Length: 154
Image (cartoon, rainbow, N blue to C red):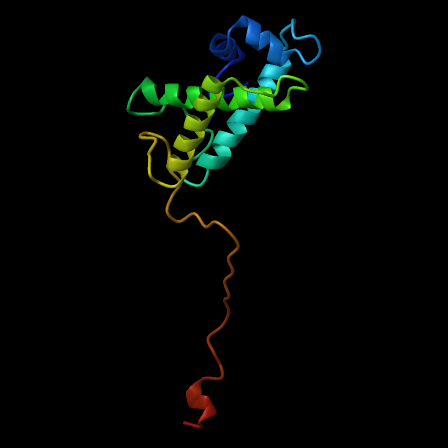
């Protein structure tokens, strides 16, 4: 189950006819909840991968301080990305309607702004400053035996 949106939300976003067409991979008549859930999971993964550089993911929508508006933005982004996933992976319906494409582009633009620090998710748990991204090394041991003074015979 996705943290940001549900298959019912996706059905509401697309409408019954489009939802049935893009989730049914053969006839386009019978809706497939597993296909819809797969698209939502892919969308959540994309959102989490993008936000993970600044926030703990998945972002807890219940902890967002500003209001339910931020949770609604995450839901909207998840639905836009899931919709794009459904069209991209459909064997014959891979042309997304312009309005849905615009919603996808807006979602990606907002995600990019958030990941670059140009937009915020107030109330979301940010990563501590001390988090190291990448490989690090350290060395330890006894005090130096061969110092400059020893080398010079002092």
